[in-house]
Amino acid sequence: MADVFERNQRCYVAIQSAFGTAAAVTGSNCCLITTLNTDATQAEIQRPDKTGTLDEIIAQGGRRIASVDLTFSAAGNGSAGVAPDGSAFLQSAFGKAPTVSGGTSVTYTLDDLLYYLSIYNYNTPSGANQMVAFDALVNKFEFSFGGDVPMISIGAEASWVFDSAQASDGTTPSGAKGGL
Image (cartoon, rainbow, N blue to C red; front, top):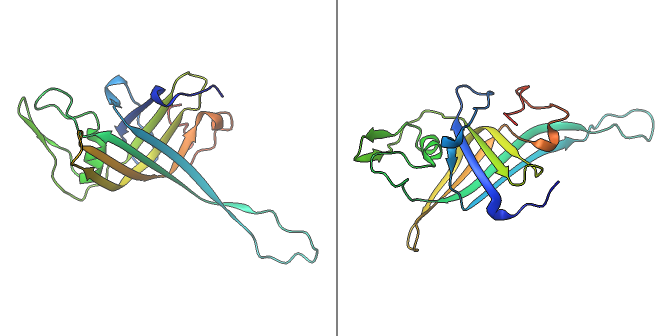
């Protein structure tokens, strides 16, 4: 893998059309971030079976889980009445699509709908590890005020984080490679 500088990291996020189907992203899905961490783990389950020998039975893979943590500024996109870059995160956190009043405002209200996200973590150069977390649901949402720039912190759990290092084996829960 190539050397990666933190400033060369990009985040793209899109709302999925269905669970298990990673959403394709374009340049309009890019959002400014301060930090972005994607992590995947899979527990190993030790089998307690007796075999009649001293040999251990090989452990098997357990449940795959993934997490995403990111922080971004609470700045608008520069135009009144246009949703901010991180609108998909906000929509997933609030559980409802925003109400857009053209040229005036964008308002988020609470509801109980589930919006699954595909969160792409791209790094430059292209030989660096690229990742996508899909089937992600926001489970932590925090505003920080009082500094020079208001910040939003998001935490999400996902089905899996698929990375370019896994691309050769093609093993993902949905059978897709998450667009990588």
